[in-house]
Length: 77
Image (tube, rainbow, N blue to C red; front, side, top):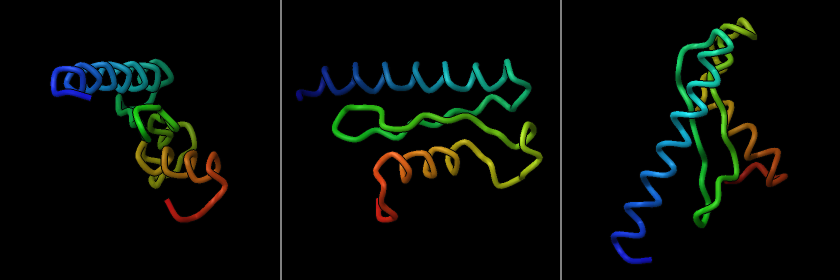
């Protein structure tokens, strides 16, 4: 992938991350979103679940890591 293509992909992924954050905000969470990407494919997307689950450890990045761990069915990422 050349530089312009990589830059375009980065912009698209950032927009997707904003979409995830907006979905969380609509559900009453703080507007944070996380994507985990492998080889150009989104393998996990998550938003904060701190308010909805009353758990301060349910930040978007941790929720996404749990999701990708379950998706890949392994503990080493």
